[in-house]
Image (cartoon, rainbow, N blue to C red; front, side, top):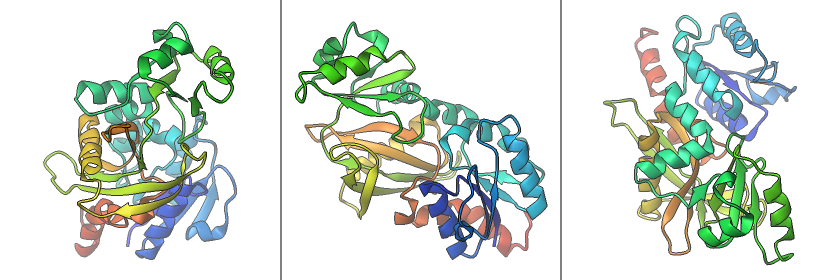
Length: 306
């Protein structure tokens, strides 16, 4: 049994992960910036927002007070700072996250697109608002509907789809005028959307995993966060699985990776964005957590020896 701190335990990703850990016999301290129900974890604590100057020190204090050995961050806004701090977080304590450079690239959706495109991993047409003179030019160059999203944001927050047909493009024009180059513009992929989960081992470790989840209902009908998903077994969507692993490899991400992929009209899967953490749907692929926790299971068998 490992003693684990899970951040963001009041959110879908953190809560799902906490429950999975407890089901496997691990002891979990769940933290969140708001009070959460006691059933979220074995113990819960309220902490400062992730952007507070002393946030990581609060986590260190809780780790020491509860004798924890593993920290799993699940809040998008904390991932870069947690990765930068992981090597010296606290004596004998691991932080389950990839190296800082890959996490930083994944944290910026535009840099993610650039990196994947340069590596030959398929992505939708993309750019910055400043690359276009108007929303009409962007639509003409990208073939119609557009997706605009903050380059740095959590999940689907701020994402909007721009089109002409409903109101002659008036809303698209209004939204476009509010954008600057802190936003990403993508061509809207019209096909099926997937949420593949990936576990990628460190260099020299070929213990990799991809499970493809299909988003069967989206919050806004044709787009938005997943309301429901279903697991696809091989060989279904094997091209999606290959694309997901190629994306994680291109960025150099390790450990748990949550990816959004959608098919273009012609059927080709393209990567929409990457999150360097466990996602909200990880319970649909329970082997993802088992892969991530193998080092700690091995340590338990050795009586706590590293």
